[in-house]
Image (cartoon, rainbow, N blue to C red):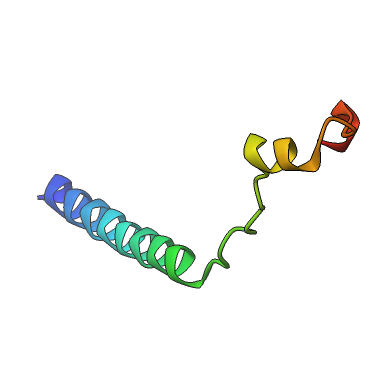
Length: 58
């Protein structure tokens, strides 16, 4: 009988922790700001700039 109580209590605690983790993950996914949009320059844009563009400017 004592084993049943310990098993039920640990199951209840693990279920509560699982629910909290799931809610935290959902909040993290919804409320997290979008990643910064970094503009990626393509080689086509560099070819338009001409041959005067050095590797440092790319």
